[in-house]
Amino acid sequence: MRFENAMQQLHSKLNEENATSDYCTWFMRVMAAAQMKSNPDRYLPYVMAENYYDIPTFCSKEVEPMGKECGMVQVSALAECMGVRVKIEYMDGRMTGGGGGGGEGRKVATHVFGEGDNGNDDITAANTNVDRTTITLLYRPGHYDILY
Image 1 (cartoon, rainbow, N blue to C red):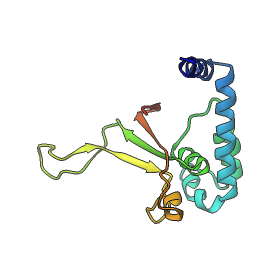
Image 2 (cartoon, helix red, strand yellow):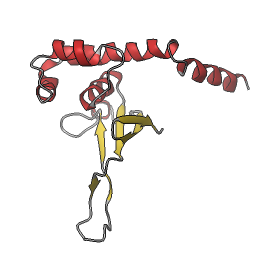
Image 3 (tube, helix red, strand yellow):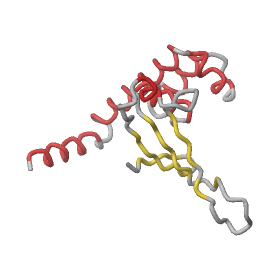
């Protein structure tokens, strides 16, 4: 019973607007920016597509300020920094698979962040006995919801 009460209190604290949750959000923004700044060559091609020509400027205008929406490059940087896998299920009409006209075999498009460049999990590649935590998000146009 004590654990359930502690979890309820934590959940309540992390969902208070203009309170603890803002500090957690700010911390994650700083972590994502630090990840991007520590490996600028990895992220520069993605921010150039958004008309930014260097990582520090992108971070100061799009990552670090509160109230800015999180895009795919920020999700990727945060996933890599925190050592987790983030799986996003897209509910924006994108579908994958199936070649027939009836939609058989088609499914909602999914993208996974936090894997190594070679398609292997960075942690698993170093130690095959370690599983990476996966966080699944639902993307509705303009908004992410955490699923599990």
